[in-house]
Each structure stands twice: as C-alpha cells, then as structure tokens.
Image (cartoon, rainbow, N blue to C red; front, side, top):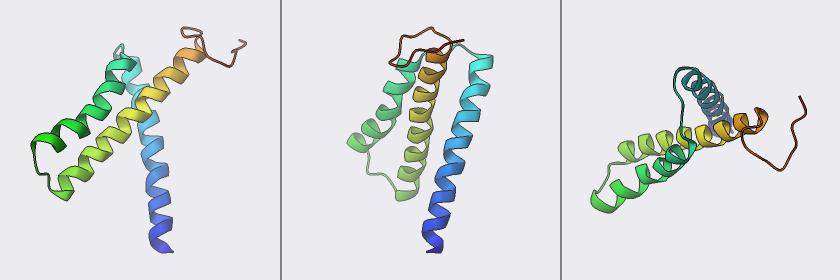
Amino acid sequence: MLIKLLYCLFLIILILFSVKFTHFLMKKFKLNRWIIGFVAFLILIIPSIFFNLNTIVWNILLLISAVLCIMFFEITRKMIEDNKYKGLIKNKK
C-alpha cells in the first residue's frame, strides 16, 4: 500500500514539475512542439535498438521521455488558450 502511495505521489510530482519546467522554458525560448513530441519517442527507440541498456539508464530515459511528452501537450494547451492553434474547445477571452 505504501509503494502505491509513493508511486502516485511521484507521478503527481513529475507532472507538476514538467508543467512548471515547460512554462519556464516557454518564457525563455520559442519551443517547437512537434520536435519535442518526435524526440520524446526517439529517446526510447534509438538506444533500445543499438544498445543493451542497464535498467537504471532505461528508467532515466523513461523519465526524460515522460517529461517531453508532458511538455508537448502543455505547449499545445497553451497554444489553444492563446488562440494560436484551433482546438476542439473554443476559448472565449
């Protein structure tokens, strides 16, 4: 039970960190969301094809990929809010 609670807490912290990190980077740089989304999966695919990875290295790559995936969706959400991208939900400001 404690392991499940720690796992849920870790996921919540990961999501909150990724969102805050994305907002920080968006203030400093203009981010291309398609490159971030494409790289998020390449980080996992290319090393798994060419190398036999240690479990610690694989877990670090999974964390980086998760952060990049959250960044992709957070950038998209921000673009829909700013009416730079046409989404399914109309934003009325």
